[in-house]
Image 1 (cartoon, rainbow, N blue to C red):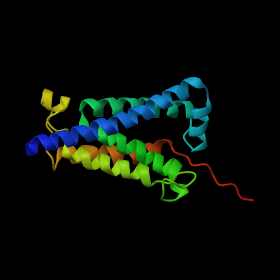
Image 2 (tube, one colour):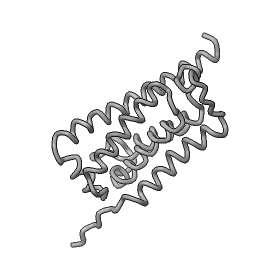
Image 3 (cartoon, rainbow, N blue to C red):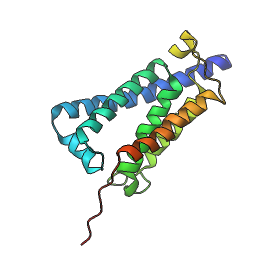
Length: 173
C-alpha cells in the first residue's frame, strides 16, 4: 500500500470505529429515553437539569456525531463533538471515581483518552476516504482542523458546563 493510502485507511478506520462506538452509545441512550424517566433522573442526579432535556440532548448529539464520523462529514467538528461529550462525562460523572476505568464506579481514564484521541484525529482532518474530501471541504492540518476540534471539544465542554451543570451539593452529616 502506498503511504497516502495507508494514512487514508488509518484515518477512515479510526473515524468509522469511533463514530460507530459513539453512535451505539446514542442508540442505547435512545432506548433508555424511550423506556421511561430513568435516564432523565440520572442526568438530574449529575446536576444536569432538566434531566429529560439533557437525556435527549446527549442522545441526539451521540447519534449525530457518530453518523458524521462514520461518513467523514464535518470531521473536525464531529471529533470536537465527540471530545465534548466525553469531557462532559468525565467532569460530571467519572471525575469523582478516580483515574482508572476499572474502578467501581468507573473513573475518568477511558473517557478522557477518547476525547484526547478525538481532538488529535480531528486535527489531522478526514483523509481522502471521506465525504469531506468528496465534496471539497478542506481542513488544513495545522490550522483550521485543529482549531475546530479544540473549540468544539474544549470550548463546547466549558460552555455546556457553565450553562447547564449545577453539581449536587454534598450532604453534611
